Image 1: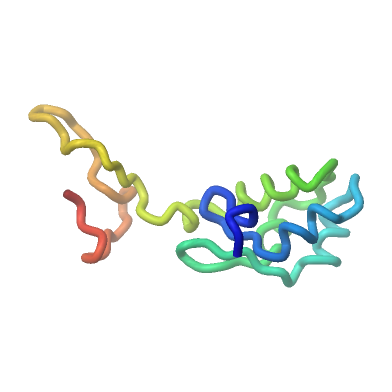
Image 2 (image 1 turned 180 degrees about the vertical axis):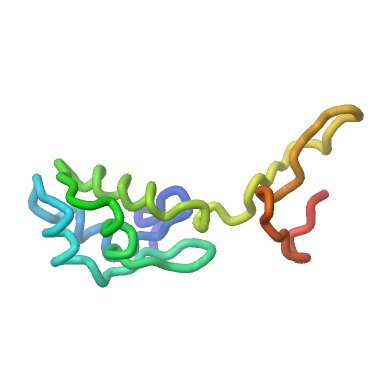
Length: 114
């Protein structure tokens, strides 16, 4: 893995070079045929290209950046890691700031809020 293969918490691995060298324009059907079983990884797991692009239906892509952006859009917040984490100072008296984690999200004991 190189930093060039990782964007916004998603590691594209070898898929990055594959989609970069793919012939464009292309559509989602062709990408799924070619790379559907390839996986991208992120902090909370992994997903195949098929799992990410299939729900979008038929799409046209002009270049590799459009493909990467579509994959990033579909990963969701599993790639975020610590949701709502801030390294800012604690809330000031009277300031209403959401605790770490989204509503209904369990914050594990190893990710304590300060």
